[in-house]
Image (tube, rainbow, N blue to C red; front, side, top):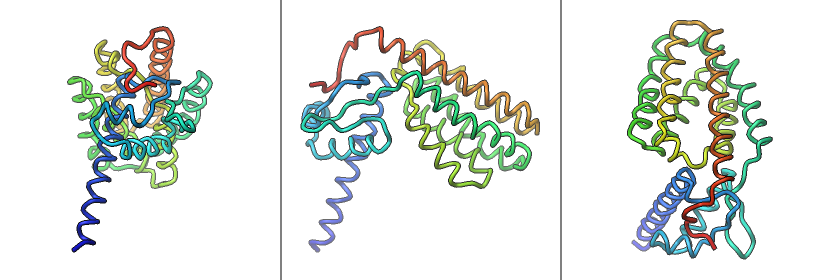
Length: 236
């Protein structure tokens, strides 16, 4: 009986850890957690009304994703991306994703491609209602599901890791400006081109899409550097 109680306790703790991690990711996306700022687990725990333990565990999850880094005896610092980082991530993604999209266009069946359409539509719907977490999750699923049709699991894992490390800060402003809807619609357009079987056009569309995302990264980074944060959640 005590073993069952222990398992239940572990399950509750893991669930809370996941909830806190998702809340922290949302704060990153909204620009409430700022690059370069150190945040302590106890202060964040007080902000979210939980103990420090799930916050530390959640921060370690984010550290493995490259979103934060541990600072001994202080807490965690939100990692900063330089212009060179952004260029290098974009270059690697382009080298992998552009030719793979072309290959999938040539080899995947119409049924396989149409199966991804609901996810593309979820991206647009999330952008329209300002659901940033939903937008990013659907965007991640769409790209990885398409790449998975190439049949190379390691390729998908590599791109998934690159996506985690090359994230947008302050997406709230982009959503309010309406920029996310246009970016979201690029996904349905890509799918339409792939279903038509035009591999060359699909590769070119993917190239433009990655360039567009890179432009969004740069705009958010410059804005974050210019503007003093109005609220630093849990900052020391």
